[in-house]
Length: 305
Ligand SMILES: Cc1cc2nc3c(=O)[nH]c(=O)nc-3n(C[C@H](O)[C@H](O)[C@H](O)COP(=O)(O)OP(=O)(O)OC[C@H]3O[C@@H](n4cnc5c(N)ncnc54)[C@H](O)[C@@H]3O)c2cc1C
Image (cartoon, rainbow, N blue to C red; front, side, top):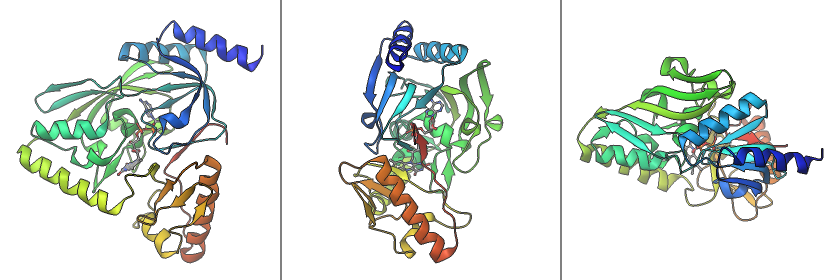
């Protein structure tokens, strides 16, 4: 069977489980970097039931697939992704509030969830107001800022795994600096339970606003990017090393090391994944020569590189 016929058949089978299945969908439309070639098959579940059905079928059939949230921490190759991509997007954004306990669907956006919690007088998610990811992607990455991260508020994570549906407690999540067990174990996050702290709403929103303002002044939040490209080395900030090594403003094709924040690569127009990788190599070389430090990628590479 040709690759096209195989992908057609896969798409047809998935359409029985989910209404929104697209062939050859450009993934740049689904990433904050605005970079990424086509997915053979993109599946966009409209409910947790559809997501569960799709994930169970994919695991049972042994068909490899990639999960995407808001695409804010990925660099997708220019050749795209062969096979299936499951997008856990804004259609899965329902949130149940029960006192300080919150249950959010995996596609819920972190900024809106943070603001809604603040308005309800619930503290603990202020740091997430400027992180443009989903709850599922946030848990996978243990997203954080301002000295806080999701592991502080997450209590239980409902996932579909190749072995069935599971509810993992926070202490089973393998949370660490921008990592979790989802980095080395197959699982799709469907829902996340969190426990927040009752607090005065004005105080929570005031803290949120101050942190957002600081972010707006120090990070290129209006240009397409995937946030910080490099993990911070122990005890230091990657952005500081990039700046001191003189790599701010370096360019390759349509991408540039932000002149505002050294750990951001921004797409200034028509940027490609190969431009980003070339630029990343140059920046690493600058930092290696200046400080002997090997910077590691925080952004996740997805697809055929
Ligand atoms: C302007 C900007 C600012 C940012 N600031 C920060 C910051 O301050 N702190 C920070 O930590 N990050 C930051 N980021 C990076 C990014 O927003 C976070 O890592 C975010 O949590 C990623 O969520 P996402 O839904 O976009 O995940 P994606 O980028 O779509 O995916 C990231 C990883 O999570 C996995 N994944 C996604 N959804 C699921 C799911 N439902 N089940 C299983 N796995 C899943 C993917 O397979 C992938 O491996 C920033 C990004 C941008 C563009």
